[in-house]
Image 1 (cartoon, rainbow, N blue to C red):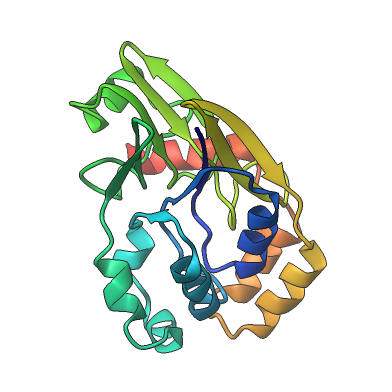
Image 2: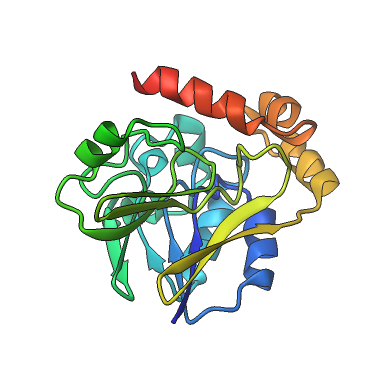
Length: 219
């Protein structure tokens, strides 16, 4: 079975559109954080139109006032009613952890902290939240980060996602139209749009610097 894991879209519908054109899978899992970006209404409409397993991220629980004003009637209630987890083909999918969408896990988080976050999980779990792909095995636990479609920390401006085939991950990268992303983000009215263009689209976020920042925040 082929399962596409698409996480952290962050209201970038053109990035989601590009990835969906790349996906050849039996099932799609959407791993949370559809909000906190320039086009929340369009992104949520696209998500709701998909035949997919959809879980909730932290940005759905902490929607900002501007985002709330952009969403269609019923969208926020639907987003906040989504489950924290989904199980597909024997693999557990969640945004950050099975019981909370806030814990930070990076490629460098100490093993004992990872085991504490995923206490009780046996086998594979696919997460996002920290926007960089990794695959870590600690004893009987395997933690796979699917990456971020809309806001990656990978040293390249593209859309990052993961395809699992019979549970084995293959990390994927889909090119996006960067000039379109810049222009549409600037035109969106999103209060954080100018800063996002400067820091995430005109340049790529450095993976190692992002991991270091996330680890400092975690501790």
